[in-house]
Amino acid sequence: MHVGQLGYSPDGRFLLAETGVVEGRLSEIVLWDLTRRVAAQRIPGGKFALSPGGNLLAVVTTARRLQLWTLDPFGEAAAPNEAATMAFAWSTPAFSSNGNRLAATDRSGNVHVWTVADWREQTRLKVQPIPSWVLFTHDGETLLSEAGKRVLQWRLANGQQIGSFDGQTANVSSAALSSNGLLLATGSIDNTARVWDLASHRLIAAFACGAGQINSVAFSRDGKSLAAGTYEGPIQLWNVAARQQSATLRGHLSYIGSLAFSSDGRTLASSSMDKTIRLWQAPPFDETHRVSGAAR
Image (cartoon, rainbow, N blue to C red; front, side, top):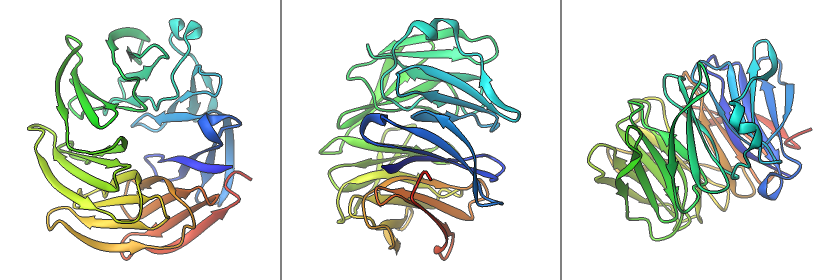
């Protein structure tokens, strides 16, 4: 059992954590109440996306179905009608920055984009190879998708690819956008993290992390720092403008599954194959809390 994907609710009250084994079998999503330090809810699940408003949770389940949940009040919500007959890829879905649209990838490589208000399919992109994640850009006009060593960018209005981010020498394992939507960070199994200008596709910085492949990246809320989770366990903090490493967080004993900054930017959460979630106060990134045993 390991702890994988993490995500904070916008109010900072809950930390969502996906726990499971390879390809999500036996997976569930745990909603940790950070005030009471207890598991408030458990959802059968897998890969997830939380709406920017914090109340709607989209989950690609271990049965490769798409399920929707509301957090307050807690309960299962209606999903797109056609999704009931689809088999979905083991791929992380995404909400647009305004919460009006949801994107999810089926097992044939079709990325479906629905409007949340009426679950009408707005766009369908044919993407190959099948991406392990998709991301909306902040303006909502384009979508990013993982494509091996590259990240592709698609215009939603016409479904056409309009560009790519090239430079990683091995598969891109993770990506994140800065809070202002201007920067894209990628992490790769080539042991590097890279920062790109989203508009021009220009490479701004490349960080040689030197502690194994990079499984997760996350921008600080002000976009000045990039956190990179390594295969060997250390978490590296990089000053983006100075292109220098600013800190190394040690404590995890195995590879980092996910990183997430709280909405106020004061806490960095990390998950690991060592079955723990750790919370680090930012800065100076001292460990403030640890959840052991991951799921239970």
